[in-house]
Image (cartoon, rainbow, N blue to C red; front, side, top):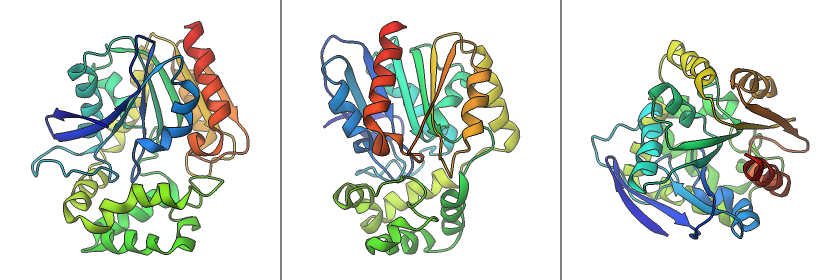
Length: 278
């Protein structure tokens, strides 16, 4: 893992290297870049895969105390990451977390040559579904986040609808999830960072404006949605595809939100085909 200094603090990332088309793969809340491990294994021979671990709870090093870790603030770190590494004509792929869509509205999408949007927050579905609302409730209670994540040491709790049960159709391997949650279990500063994010959702008007601004993204976009998603409504995928002027839309069966976990082979092939023809 490499590290880079951004305005909010130190961010770690995986970079498979090489002079190949660049994929930057973005994970969601209380995860790290290993969400994309199966996709990276499939695509690394043909693409340079760069996978940052953002300050969304699965990170290892706390951010600066005064860092802006709101939804828009963390999305801005994605743009800063691309700028610091001087990455251009990037294919930006997101799953679960929809914050990077705001980069179009912020006018910080110049380095993005293509978008791959897989099941994620969109429109006013921030925080998303039952798991998201459970996190917000926990973040508002003193000690609530600590309690919520300590319960996930009990493996059966990981498949409850209010936690991870509706996120992936197949259980995330326990060793992978342990890695995602380890710092949330023991670091008050990491929980502080996550609390900032959870409570930093902008007003509904701003969220809807982010979506509307996608009409101005004039580069190729691929929208891949889980047909059985219980947290990110499939109709949101269809609506995003309608907004984007140069979009393709695919629904993947037998998957929930975390398509990189449930159907990495199909997702990898859709990404490969999309990038190579665009």
